[in-house]
Image: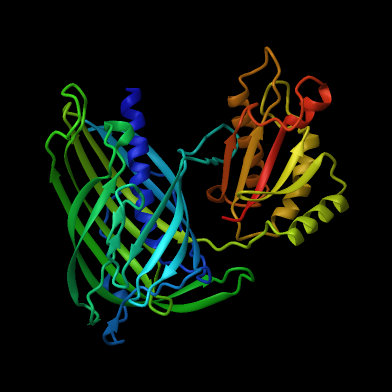
Length: 456
C-alpha cells in the first residue's frame, strides 16, 4: 500500500509539472500575472470549449510563432486538482502545486531559443486543525533544451523536464479563426523511482489544434497593480495517447514495469501574440497506466497555470533597507542576509510551546511586525525554513522543524501576507547549526525560523 500511494503521488505531480513547463519556456518577465481559481473539491472532467460564441472571429488570419529573447526570465505557478484511482478504486484526492523558474540563455537567428531552468513540485497540502494548508518545498529538477520558433523541442534524454513536449506546435503560415491543424508531440515521464527506468519513458501522440478566436483579458500589472486589458488568441489543443511497451532492457523478470499507457488531454491555450508566448492555460486530463504486476493507475482532473512576476530583492540596497525597517520596528534577535534563494530574514531564539510547534503570543507580535515588511514584496513567493537545536532526549528534530516552519507559514497566511499557494515550507532539523549546541546561548541561535523573500 505504501508503494502504491507513493507511486500515484509522485508520478502525477511530475506530469503536471511538465505540462506547466510548456509555458515556462516562453514567458517573459513583463507579462502580468493571471488570477487562477483553485478549489479543493473533487476533480471533475469537462469539455474545455463550453461556448464557441464567446470568441471573437473577426480578426482575420494570424501568424503564430514563439519569440525568444536572450535574458528573458519567467516564473510559473501551476495548480492541479486530481482524483487518483488504483485498480478502479478511489485512492486519494490531491491538490498539487508546481513552481518553475526559467531563463532564455540564447536566441538564434533562425528564431529558436535555448532555455534553462529549475522545476519544483510540492508535496500535497499539509492540513492541520485550526489553520490554513501550506505547501512543503519539494524536489527540484534542472533542465536545458532548445525550442524552435514553431514550438518543436530538441532535448537530451538526461533531462526529465519538461514532461509534455511539442505543445503547442504551429504551422509555418497564417491561421484563420476556426481553422484546425495537427502536429506530433510526446510526453516524457520520470519513472526511475517506481520502475528503475533510467531514461524518460516517452509516449507519443498527435495533437489536434483549433484556433477558436480571441478574447479580451483583464489582469493586474506586476508591481503597481494597475489593471490592463489585452487581446489573447485562444487555441484548443486535444490529444489522445496510447502505447504498449515490451519488457525494458536490463529489467529483471521479477520487477514491475509499465506495460501500457493511455489517456487524453483537452486544453485551452491563451496566446499573447505580441510577446510570442503563452499567457496562461487550463486543462482537463485523464491518464491510465497498467504495470506488469497487473496494477491499473488512473489519474483524472483539471489543471491551470499563472505567470507570477517578482522583484529582485537580494541586493545590497534591499538588504540594508530591510535591516533598517527591522531596527525601526524594534525587533530583537533578527539577522538579514543574502542566500541562494533570495533575501532571508532569520528569526533566532524563536519561542514555541515546550517541544511543540505552538507559537507563543510574543512571537506572534514579532511576526506581525515582520509581516508589514513582507507585504512590501507582493510579487515574490515566500519560503519558511525551520531549524532546531540538538538537544538529547527531545522531540524528533526533523519533524519538529517542519512543523514549526508550517506553523509560522500558516500564521503569515492568516495575516494575509500571501495566499497559501505562494508560501512554501521546509525543515532542516538540527543539520544546519549556526552556533554551538553546547551552551544555552548557542542553542538559542540554532533554534530559528528563516523567512526568505524569493528571488528565483
